[in-house]
Each structure stands twice: as structure tokens, then as C-alpha cells.
Amino acid sequence: MTSAAPARGRRPLDVPDLVARAEAGEARAVARLISLVEDASPALREVMALLAPRAGHARVVGLTGSPGVGKSTSTSALVAAYRRRGMKVGVLAVDPSSPFSGGALLGDRVRMQDHATDDGVFIRSMASRGHLGGLSWATPQALRVLSAAGCDVVLIETVGVGQAEVEVASLADTTLVLLAPGMGDGIQAAKAGILEVADIFVVNKADREGADTVVRDIRYMLSLGDRRTDDGWRPPILKTVAAKGEGADEVVAEIERHGAWLAEKGELDRRRRARAADEVEAIALTVLRARIGDLRGGENLDALAGRVVAGELDPYAAADELVAGLTA
Image (spheres, rainbow, N blue to C red):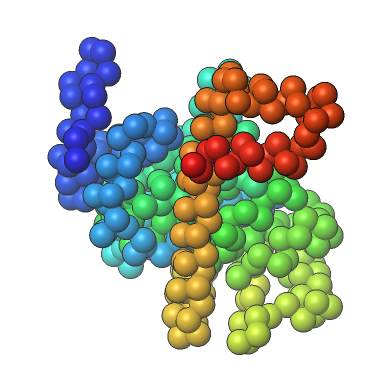
């Protein structure tokens, strides 16, 4: 398998060497691989083939919730709690995109300065680039990079986008839904549908007035829907003060308990298979869209469009012909 051709002014990209250095835990190599993922580099196929034997072993924890509940502060507190357990941690903080550059607007490295010099922590801000659901399209493959680099746990902090922010549950082994007092979260949680994706509820800023009310509201709404899996998992409700690091160890303990339950019930394998299926499907659709894009300026698609406009062909039949041509 050949390495990608070098860009002008750059040294040739030695993919096997880069992957080997990333697997050894070299932060710059890990960062370079994630950049290749974000840029959809032609070298990505070779990268993923080399990472495959090592990828997919890290525990993936998603953090979601409305803007302002303290997701970044909570993520930082969880990183500290995991590090106290001696675990290597990766963080993917998916930020809103700049409409001009496509880059992340917020700097999560700035918000997590306490971990900036820790070799056991890798933090990466990724731009959502307009992708709905609070995640970047590149997030699944970035997860593979961090897992292959030896991370024991990867925390995914999503964009605060309200009702669309349930997609993280499809990527995470355990999903934390964060709420906070004084933000109407008790009502908004039900509207946004995030009650259905939570494995663990965390009421942050619990030192503020109204925290107990949020806990009571969530417990009440859970009872209305009898929110539990067929095998009996009931999402616990925990209180934290992430800014002071209070409650983070208890949250980690519940994540571990949920992880043990997932493994015992076979749910962990099911979730990871579903995640892989979604990833494969997304890649396949991307390839097909690219091939359709190539045809858009060609005679085939234009001719089919002309026949539809002329009434000689209905759009479904035209689409069938187009797909037949793509797969021929």
C-alpha cells in the first residue's frame, strides 16, 4: 500500500510511520491523523486500514445538554477524575463552525488548561461544519484514532444545539445528559427528547438554588415514561458542582457501573456494532454522493433530467437508471 503523494512544499507523508508514532502515544502524530480525518485526506483509507487492529477498544462517553449547563467544565472535571484512576483520556470537543473558515469557533484547549501539560490527556476541538445533531461528520473516525493511540476512555462533548443534540447517543457507549437549575431544563428536557437518550443524568451547578427541583422534575418525568431498558437499567440522577470538581468521582463510578451492565447484558457489543454499521453506511453514501457529483456535469445526469422535464421519464425511474449506472 503506497503512502499519499506529498503536498507542495511538504515532506512526503509516511503513513505507516505516522500511525506507529500515534500508537506509541505521540501527541503530534495523533493530532496529524485527526487532521487527515477532518480534511478527508486521500491517505485516510491507508490510515484506517493500519489502525483497524488497535481501534475500537476505548470506552466512549458522550456529554450532551442545553447551552450553558457547563459541559466543558464537566468534561474537565471528568478528565481529572479519570486521571486520578490512572486512565489515559481523549477528549473530542465538537464546536460550532466558523461560517467562513469552517474551523471551530470555541477553543476547548483554553477551557481545559489544567490538563494542557498532561501527557495522559489528548484534547481536540473539532468543527461541526454545519452538521446537524451536534457532532462533526469526522467524529467516528477521530474516535478510532484516539482508541488506537491508547486512550482508555474518550469523552465527546457536543455542540449545544438543543433538539438536534441527541445524535451523540449513537456514538457513545454511555451518554450523560447534563442539566442545570435556573434554565428551565426540567421542561426543556422533555421537549428536546433527550430524556430518551440518557444513560445517566447529571444536574450540574448543584450549589445553586433550584437544583433539587430539577432532580425532582426529572425523576417525575422518568416515572411518567417508565424510562428503563427491557433489561432493567434505570438512569441515575447525580448532582455535581463541576467548577469545584465536586461529584465527578461519583459520575465516573456510575459510568463504570453502566459499562459493566452493558457488558453483562451484551448491550455493549450491540451498540458498537450499530455504531460501526452507521459509520460504514456514512462512508458508502459519501462515496456515492461524490460519484453523483462527478456525473452532475456529465451527459448522463443531464440527459435524465431533460427526460424528466419533458415528461418522458418519472423521477423515480430516472433515479433507478442513475443508480444502475453508478453500480455498474
